[in-house]
Image (cartoon, rainbow, N blue to C red; front, side):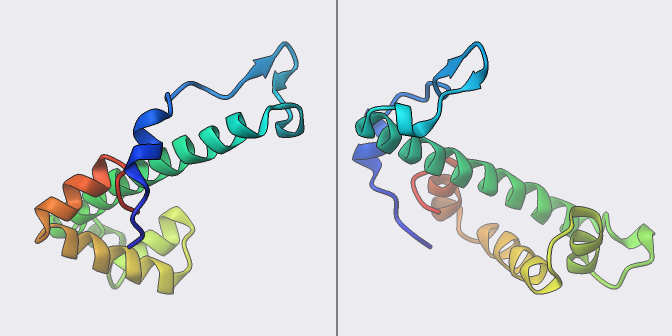
Length: 115
């Protein structure tokens, strides 16, 4: 688990990426400080989204939502339905289960403070 520098994340506004009439602005046209700020913001958002994914996965696994599909395990279902490599799926299920027992870590993960 990687600790993200929370002072950087708290200083960065979660503003959407700069856009023009033709779509997102090319990063090469942005000031380097803005590129850095957007990277830090996105890292926090990815961590928070991953946390939510794992919370949902833990619940799905605990309720055996995968059981009616004729697959061997939640990891097999995750690999099949979400397109993850089976080894990666096993890791996600393992972490999802572990986070249920670690509420402080889970809360920090959900806030994007750890990844």
